[in-house]
Amino acid sequence: MTDGLSDVEAELLAREPIFRRPEFGSTRAAYLAQTAEDSWEVGASARVHDREHVVDTLLHRGKVPGDENWEISDVCCRPLADGRTRSPYRLDEDGRLSRRLTLWHRDPDGWKILYHRGTLIQDA
Image (cartoon, rainbow, N blue to C red; front, side, top):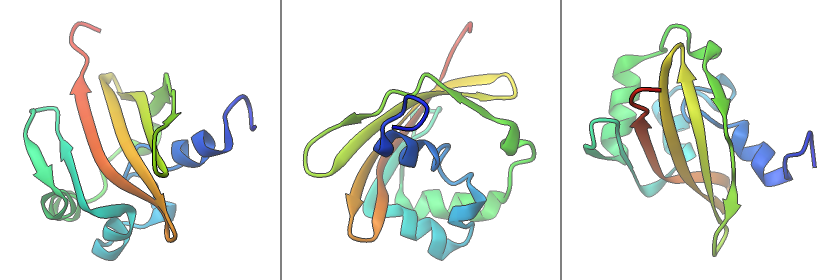
């Protein structure tokens, strides 16, 4: 354990918030390498987005100014079946608070995102 975190929790926390860690890349190939082929997400708008839409949006948007200052808290990873782990946390994007959950799968190529959800915290 490192600073009270399990090895898996530390590995996954190093990848959150997803697609915002420069060491994992910001190209189409890098985003695809981080996601399972059938990955999907539900955004704060409650809209469902498939992998291609998410990657296209990330490439179009580019870097978000100040994202290096975002703070993660309330991390509580839990292993599930078949190499899957859920990773919920709270994200503070310079005052914009949300609850996030990423479902991860460890395959021979490393961790892959299966599902991601972001829900804004109202009246925080």
